[in-house]
Length: 279
Length: 333
Image (cartoon, rainbow over all chains, first blue to last red):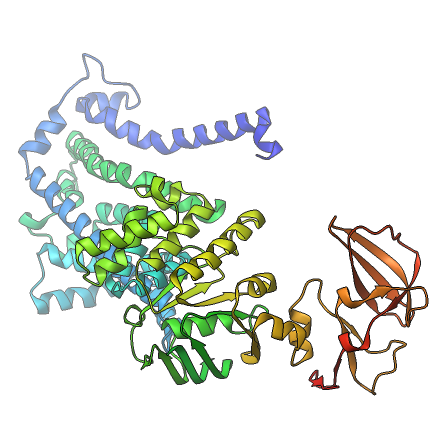
């Protein structure tokens, strides 16, 4: 350990900065959650006070669960997010393996082409995507969203994963080849487990934007039975009247599943982010 | 029968020629060591034999069969890697048996062969452990075990000792030599360490820049090097080369003399000054700066009381010296 690490003042300052940052980051979430348990009056009168016996109210949650089909929206969001992540990780890892492992003409060019998507926002192509979805009859299906999110997530996934796959020992892969493993088994059994931290990193980076996205659900799948949670919550926000109790409750509920997924990935994520620096 | 025959094997990566027209025969049961400085193509040659790289041209023949288009698993080879390359998610036993399972060997055969290898390598206490719970030496033994159970026609070792510390390296070296005697299998061993090459090999292949410089038994190469490179590469400390010394030699030629063939005599033909003394207990190495400005290593057996700065005279017997021409080729006396 370096001397700076052992210095008490430095430790204190570092922790102070981190705690401050945590507070700032968590403050909006905290405000949303406490206000979701308050009456409408209490929300506007004293937004920063914890709910007490007078101001406590579950009206927001009742509205959310009664109006609209909250659980259907939740289910749609989970399906879209999980299936998209699955495809991003599967195809991203496969493409990354090919780029990292095989020498072929145009390898570098292909890598650049795949990475190009990081710099070009997919929303620029919204009109074309909508036309495509109309022609293929995928409008108002969850597949429309899954396909778009997979396309949106792939560039970064390929970029990050191919860097990690280059670090997997060649000897290990060659040992597998000599033992008669197929390239698929080498990929799934030897390489994937070793890049698990990187996969978790990619999963988290992709999960949150997909979960929170309002744009594509609104354009590609606005029908009642395929609404995602983010889109579903918008019914409470009107042009003239907004049901803040319901909005805050819906947001509080929407945090839970994504937090669960994050907890699953986070242990791996931290290893993924730090592995490059410490190894 | 020949275990391996290479004919005019070439390998290039893009425009870079890594192997140039390699011809080589490995007899059955022979222990052949490829040795050379890093970047000489020895590992690539091993990979071509294993089938992990394709030869650009030429034929690779293992046990009487041309295997240019055969995948590695079907070539009848087994390989031990420098970084062990054990499967991290499998136990020692599963690491060893995976290859056999892929070959669809019956369970009884797998178990018998693994047990035999475990006993031979003294791995009994570790069969259920994961590679991450083993020390470097144990890991390398597991890797060797994984090769043994395949009962291959040809063993390939790719610098298997480079990741081990010095003491363990010597032990494992002896184990490998022992293994070769027990299995009487054909083995090819790649190393950049001339000591490993000298101690293990029946036959050494010295490579440089993708060319075979010389092939022969260790003592043949030591006593009768074909050129200056082989002479300088084998032997430790390495051979002294003199080109401007007091000794009369043909123009442009170089005189090679091994450190142990130099003797200290006051009226020696080479005069110089001791610049450094290495005392190893059993040996003493003196570095001497000759009057012509060349540094020579002198190996004295036993302990020697030479001091830095002392003037010394060196001499040798002419039959122990080698002469090399301008192209570094040996001039026969």
